[in-house]
Length: 284
Image (tube, rainbow, N blue to C red; front, side, top):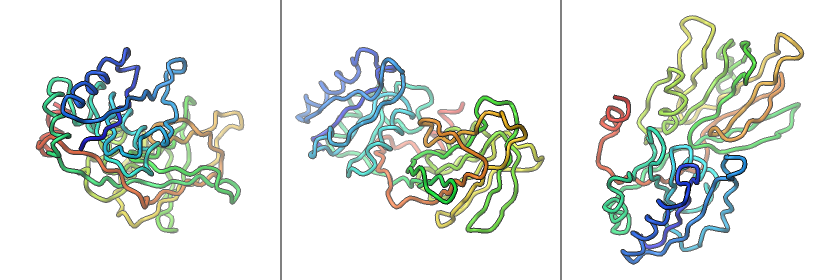
């Protein structure tokens, strides 16, 4: 590959020095690069990335930051036919392939086409209220419904392919892709999945029913979650987040439908380390 777009998280790469170093290395190998920033420094939150800012010749987008940075970039640019790879300036970095310690040799592998591309499944989600769809999104990681800051449990009715699975009383529910299994899902006690597998993981968050565990569904299933009534009229509304981005307030009766998206995200795999070895290295 010879055409790259570098998108850096200025909260992780404050002066943009890592981005400029990446650019310098790639250009020394004859590649062409543009550099963008995806963080609003005033609000310290991810900002919108306009796909039209990405050159038509771009073959690969390099996200500098942590897993959250790469997730945001991939979601904003999901309709572009490009590969994505992350350079880790975050914490665990399950998604980020490039390290600052081996940056030059790993970037050279990109230029020399010494890598594999994994097609990662995504989820599509719709929020329906009073029979009208008020929000749509595609996610690479997860869809999370949570109680927000209020310390009280929430009732959820969960349906699978139109059939009632059961009622959950919990702090929330998350639906994760295999890629997202290493994120909030694992913190909530959910299982890890190979990132190239095709399945949907449902994990209750702090469930109040003993014995309730995560469930795994096929890529062909559709899960619908109906938000139940709160115990008090003045309780804070429940919130919905797509890949941890933003918070949409929910109301009793809202329906969140989740299924496999038609599009997929192409993630570059440089390191030959197996998934299991990577898990051991990250979690030890």
